[in-house]
Amino acid sequence: MDVHPNIDTCIAHARPRVAVSSCLLGEPVRFNGGHSRDRLLAGPLSEFVDWVPTCPEIAIGLGTPRETLRLERAPGGPRLVTRKTRKDLTEPMTSLGAAKAATLDVDGYVFKSKSPSCGIHGIPVYAGDAAADRRNRGVFAAEIIDAHPLLPVEDEGRLHDDVLREVFLERIFAHARLRALLRDGVRPDVLVAFHSRHKMQILAHDPAAYGRMGRLVACAGVRGGDRLVALYADEFRTALAARATIGRNVNVLHHCLGMVSDHLDPVRRADLVEVIHEYQVHLVALSVPIALLRHHARGAAAAYLRAQTYLSPYPHELGLRNHVPS
Ligand code: SF4
Image (tube, rainbow, N blue to C red):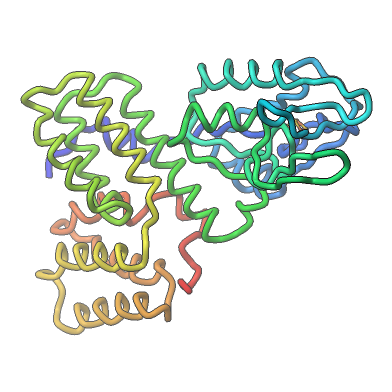
């Protein structure tokens, strides 16, 4: 297949820009002058990701050390309040979040867990001394997420779970490739080539979006234009936000098998079918049939399969997809 040369660069070298709560990288910005350095984020992931750190509490003018904050129940919604002096910081924190959200140009966001400013899950709202409700987000994080509902977001605690980390990393690398594509304007042939590389990955996440995106791309040469590209980008982000279930992966693995089937002898073909079945019944991890497909995709006849981002959605050094589904 003829593929625009820029696509190779944009797919192979796209490096995610990811916003992060500063304290997670080891910056001494916490209320007590300490940090919450996360060994995964500040360590191995730093080799593959450009971090964009922000500490919203420092950004609204609080220093270190400082009073701790909490969310408190109030008639118009939770307020962000200093614990002892009872200063209400909701307004400056909301304004900061809205301003950041308006200029945010990143592929994902990693927030610090359990923070009334940065937390994204289970932040308590207090009524008196008791936590009345634990289903809230931090004030800053809520502004970002409300403004960017398709942005991949996680907190550092959840990223230590293999499955959640894999989902997040797959999405930020996909967003980075899309950002690289959109950066210089998109010719119809480039959009077609980009979509062609992502077909199996999109199908594994969202078969309905796969159909819609195929129809959009088919019109690229006819009506093209910025609106079509914007629609495509939205569909792409939406598709990647859907979960790639075992059933969808099995379907895609069989599609991939079909692309190389004619070039395999019966024994190798049967091996691949068996390994896909073993993945389906939770005996092996997704990495096993993927590794076999990558091996069979080496020949010239398998160039289309080899180019699929599904086989390499992020750098293999990250070593994911190694958990057996349960
Ligand atoms: S959790 Fe957020 S507000 Fe708190 S120190 Fe870390 S970056 Fe700053």
